[in-house]
Image (cartoon, rainbow, N blue to C red; front, side, top):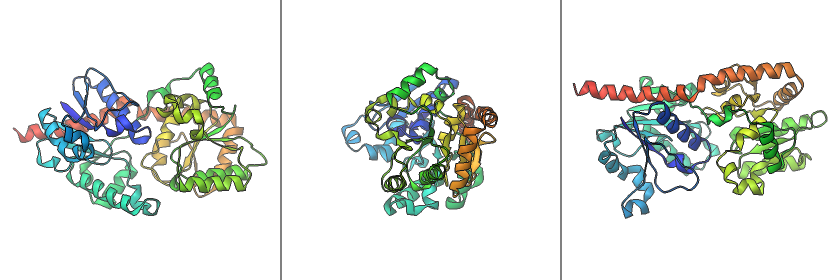
Amino acid sequence: MNIGFDAKRAYHNGTGLGHYSRTLIRSLAEYFPHDEYFLFNPKPSELFKLSGKNIHEILPSKLLHKTLSSIWRSTWIKSDLEKLDIDIYHGLSNEIPIDIDITDIKSVVTIHDVIFERFPGQYSKIDVEIYKRKFKYACDHADKVIAISEQTKKDIIEFYKTPEEKIAVCYQSCDPAFGATVSEKIKQQIKEKYSLPDQYFLYVGSIIERKNLMGICKAIYLLRNELKIPLVVIGDGTKYKQQVKDFIKQNGLDKQVIFLSENPLAKVASSFLKADDFPAIYQSAIAMIYPSFFEGFGIPVLEALWSRLPVITSNVSCLPEAGGDGAYYVDPNSSEEIAEGMKTIFADGSFTEALKEKGWQHAQNFTQKKCAANVMRVYESLKLNVELLNG
């Protein structure tokens, strides 16, 4: 098969959507090498590269398409898909080209979450309106919808009335680098590189209200007299981040919370921007703390499990899917429960070692091979349908 991808995020996004796209494309190319993979990229990238004998980067060729690359990506791209005899086009990040359903090309869309439907107040009104239109159009017009969790599947059915049989749950994997043991020498080098403390808890994610960094900071305040272990934060934000910083300052926690993404070196080092240094940072931490109120999947949880890093996460949304029996669950509304989890994982060595092992075993459900195979089954089901229709 010739399989095309919306590769904008694969080439240009350093966070969740980008990691998902790159990991899936590389996994498919490795484990299903007899197919050809065409990556439609609206503009060249200097940050991320994807290469392989069956991976082909496709850039807009016409001057108008280069100039108006967003329109090329959303509609004009169809002519390029047809020229390259693309059998299946996969929108990796919640959208597909307009009117692709009136071509002979089958389409798949991955919906990561519809959090803006549940928490519209945390987004601008215009963004909510744009997302609603794009997501609903994709769910209505794609031949198959991939949800990255059972929670997301339920949300797609609830908000867009998409038929259940049209949706396939295909969990995501993560960069295999997280599963490789980082040497003590490298971990020490990374600590020195970013001036990290010897011991720390870790938070990774955008600093937005839904992800609940404030809840962690309140837990740190509760523990101020008994557990003075700092929190390292990887991620950025705006208004909510400032609210968190105000709380930190007002409660004398300035030395307890380290915003690593503000480190001058982290701002420019490609090894940080591309997350190459993250496995060492994860494996040097005491635990990942991820008490989000709602997620589509929660990839930092999976990255931590692969890293044999204990995880404290929420007992709501899809997070029990991501963590299985390998995580310590808390009510995200309770800073007391978060604090208790931090104390337990720090102090109870036997419990923590057992949790690490359970987490590692649960992570085996999300290998690159298994995740790629689930997506390939979706592609093959569409190919079979075409063959049956054509007799």
